[in-house]
Length: 144
Image (cartoon, rainbow, N blue to C red; front, side, top):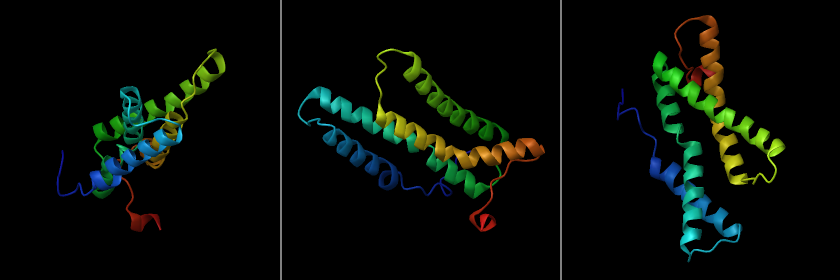
């Protein structure tokens, strides 16, 4: 259930704006321009890849605040992260076996970043499944 009071993540300041700046810089560094339709599409694609990589952050922050994670929510986030981790396996496989495979380093970086954001969640999810108890995330005070 969504609770607006618990969602204090500043989406525009910490997600949208930084991803837009990163996409613009990446685009300009790679030699793109801002004056053709194809280049604008490429820049928007880069922006979407960057934003997708951190889009889970607000959900993880809210879960950290609530501490108790509902079973369905925990399973959903675990499988979303697993899906992204399997993408990394797919990239390795395709790079090795597919002749002419085009490498997208922005995609690689963002995919690995997204998977790393899930790593802490994976650890506590798997520990709770192993123990068989309720799934709860520790607070910052408990981790010290």
